Length: 371
Image (cartoon, rainbow, N blue to C red; front, side, top):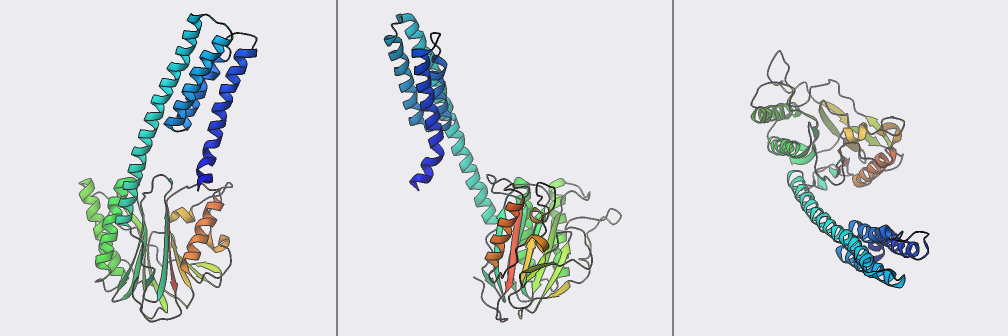
C-alpha cells in the first residue's frame, strides 16, 4: 500500500528538486546573472500544485534559503538580495494559496461524489444474488468514473408469478435521470407483485412514466421523457423466459460459450412515449416472447453502453461475435468478462453509461429464497 501511494508522487518530487538544482546551477555558472531565479521560483509552484501543503511549504522554504545563500555566495548587494528573496517568496505564497484552494475543492468534490453514490445505491440497490431458479449478478458503470451517477437501471424481484426483472435506460443524465429511475424502480417493485402478465406490467410502468413526465413538464406533450426497457419473467420452474421489449437493446441468451441475440417479435415504443394522434399511452402491447432457458444458460441484459460501444475504427461491440467463448457457470463471471471486454474494445474509454444484468438458471428448478 505504501508503494502504491508514493509512486504517483515520485515524479512531481523529482521535477521540483531538479528545478532547485537547475536554478542553483544557472545562478552559479550561467553566462548572465539571475538566470536561475525563475527556476527557483518555479520549484515551490510545481510542488504546491501537485503535492501536499507540507511538501510545498518545504520546497518554498528551501527555495527562499537557496536564493539568499546564492546571492551571499556571489557577493551581490543587499538590494538585489532582498528583491530576489521577495520574488521567490511571493511566488511561494501564491503557490501555497493555490494548494489550499485545490485541496478544499478536492474535498468538496469527494463529498459530492459520495453523496451521488449514496443516492445511486439508495435508488438502485444491488439485486439479490439468488432469486427463485436463477443466480443473479449485475454491474453499473457510469460514462464518467468520477460521476458515480447515471440514468441506467435494473431490478430483480421474486413474485408469485416467478422471478421478474427489468433493465432500462432513462432519457437524460444526472439528478433528473435519478428521479426518473427512482419512480420506475419503485413502480416496478410494487406492480411486479400484482400485474398478472408482463404486458400489463409494461402498461402500468408506461402510465407511471407518463404521469411523471406530465408532473415534471406541466404539459401533455409527447416525446419528452421516456425510458427504454426490457421486462423479464422466469416462472418458478425456470424452464423458459418471457420478454417484453420496449425500445431497448435486445438481450442475449448465453449458452455453451456462445451468445444469441433474442430479438423481439414486435418492436414496441419506449415507456412513456405517446402516439401523437392518440395522445395516450398504449395498452401494454402484445404478449411476451417466450424462449427456452436450460440449466446453466444465462440471460444477458445490457444497456446501449454495451451495444453502442465503438472501437477506434467506429465498429460497434457485439456480444454475439466479440464475447469470448467459454463456460459462464456463474453470472458474476459473465458480467466481469463482458465489462472487461467492452473496456478493451473501446481502449478504456467510457463512452456511455453501461448497465449489465445476468440471470443464470441454476441446476435446480425449484424456487429458492432471495438473498
